[in-house]
Image (cartoon, rainbow, N blue to C red):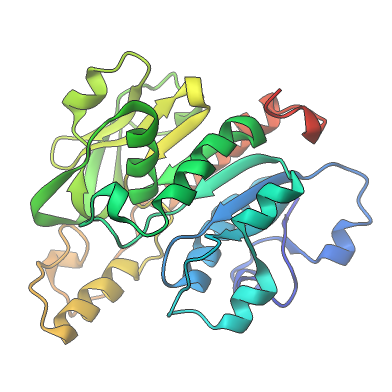
Length: 307
């Protein structure tokens, strides 16, 4: 089954061209099944790019997915047209007031790593969202800064500034092959990393409620399971397109920002050559496994989520 998207959402045409199964709302309404309701809280500046990346992954399973796009209530983006935001996004305060419940929620990263959590302008609302997930969301996948913020809120795990940006494609070890989220994973996989902060494995080990599923000797924990809060924290970027790191590198070079060539990304570390995607299959596995766990464990009646 495909992912259900508005036919005028830019991701719709992109994914159709790629061969991803998508379905308009009119067609979905004629199917007598309950789709999984998944929300995307999009904190990234380039909203359309991020929508497409996550839609591609959650739209690749045999299940019908109904995607809801959520934004922070007061925070305004400068990188996406106001018409797009008005047409496709619901502010969180409206979602909260409506009492909607979701089988899954994805919280993206955000370019605010250099700030202390309580200095982020929307921190108080984000704290409300974290609490809201415990009563209105069956399972949450929090990515990069979003994962760091959520694990800090629920467990006090700190983020640490790095001396140099962790930037490139790094090998990660499968630390828990029995986890349902890693079903089909190799012993090692490559994951894109792009961040100025880190979560340390020693802080994870100090908390018996947390378990690291994927980790790297170079960049630390990548995927952490938090069963008590029905959450996965993914500090790296399985969702990235083949050229996302290239776009970030080219942007910084053009701006004169000091930046290293992303490691293990270009053939022979040569930026003039086309980068290779070595994480796509594991990205689909991870999100497919997460959605399978949602399907297997979520209540049939949405109103029973969180009760």
